[in-house]
Length: 256
Image (cartoon, rainbow, N blue to C red; front, side, top):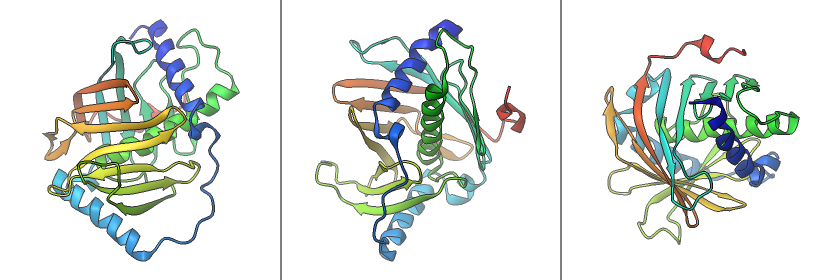
């Protein structure tokens, strides 16, 4: 990707996060302790999903993951041309976005990014928003592709069951992560146990990610098509490559 073309991608991503609850998120508000059955049922849903995707043993054996593809916005959306999509993940606590030349990277507690990859002047506010956005993507992509939460993240998984506005009658759970006050919701097909949709409430509305096009890589089913929708704005991500336990080194995440 040409560095100059990464500017719109970074700008839009930061604008979306800056206008969402994540940018100003605090620790989740104090709540009464969830019932034991809520936690048990949530784990039951996740365990069934892992089995449907290839088995808990195969998924837990994934030490690293590289996902690459293209995200195309619907006509009429700002910057509607296609953008790169992708990330590297190395358990337990390393994650790197491949979506732009800015290369947002988490290395445990540390965060860094290429700050001269485009024309945007990177200041402390942008760094803070970029880090929060990247840490949220780490959680989202770990759940979406591996049916787990990063070991380095404090999170509470709660069972929701059915929700009123879901015409497909899926089974839902919520993931509330420390540092983010809005939970991520995930819906699972009741017949197959497969993950079908993720959604989160933001200031621009509910973002809904619909998963499809599942294909097996090293015995694990991964979604190769992801549609994300906010109101009338739709984008489709087409995955071109997924590498399991190859193509990733710890040195990839070291600050440059």
